[in-house]
Length: 156
Image (tube, rainbow, N blue to C red):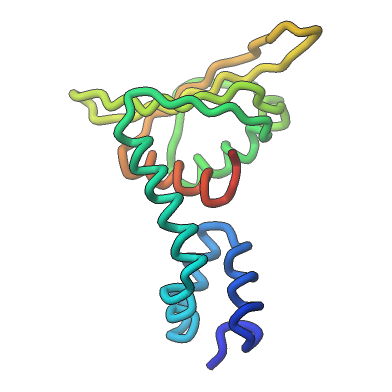
């Protein structure tokens, strides 16, 4: 059984464009799809590159990322990964752009939790206006999944 089009080069281009969740589902679809996922060098290099980056980030005490993505995109991912916050924030932020988005991968020894801190703001007349800071706590595995998604899916 052919996984998609029957043409390996076309199939590879299609699967390389999938987001991480869809790729994982595709690779488990059938034996032919699994073989394609596990034998294609370009795809394996892309996955290895993202995993190496994430593993490196997880060794750091602090890591900062700047992006102009909408907070909604991150909100949906965090919800999908069951990463929550106790902070209350205005629903309007779900449509705001993030001009300064920070991830702090700080491992707290007692709680063994990582912190994701979103500083959400905007630039106005060469002056940065911060609207809100939202802090999320997550386990190391949740942080790993979050980072895998944002790098594989090119949020940043």
